[in-house]
Image (tube, rainbow, N blue to C red):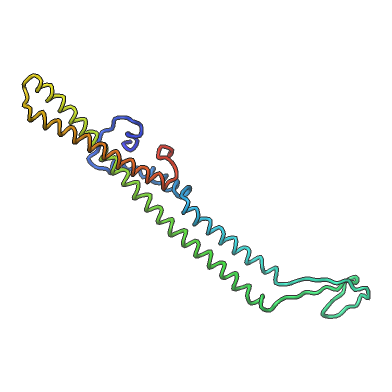
Amino acid sequence: MCVLCLLASAPCRPQESMIPNISYTTLEKLIIAAKANYPRYLAFQKNVHIAELNVVKSKEDWMNLFTFSWVYSPSNATTISSPSLNGYQVALTTSIGNIFQKPNAVKNAKETLKVAELGRDEYDLNITATVKQKYFIYIQELTILNWRIKALEDAESTIKQIKYKFEKGEESFDNYNRAQASFIAAVQAKIEAEGTFLIGKSSLEELIGCKLEDIK
């Protein structure tokens, strides 16, 4: 595949379009890697987990509505409000305020969970779109670089031919100078394309949290 040609330092035939170089299988793997490694996405995942724990905790807090207490009473006296069991008086107390507050606490915890899930889902869409954009830019820059490499090879071949003819007196000095200028321009264009390509590659790797070569 053309995407891997430069990385493997192998010759690569440039395409007239970047479309054939795109691998949607690779793209899907890059998206999965970004969701597994990018810190901000992991933070959204953590927020959802924390919200889930808070929902569980708010439900369990129902068990704390009532307070049990007991006092040892040798007289073994028993009343309706304080029943006695083998000399121990047991009391069950609660707060009316807590009874009304607990449902709201559970509801608030569930709403907080929904907000966390929406935030996570929104960033899920965002990171997917960003990986796609960076991947397409990466492929674009790789395609351009392949053409710059091909142009440099052609310019190098041309300058060799013209130099040979010039040294034999079969080519003019002006044509030789123009061929040299074209060769130098091709070298500069290749170097610029390499820099742009490497920057694009680095930007994509920052998002997926690993080297592109590590994506299998």
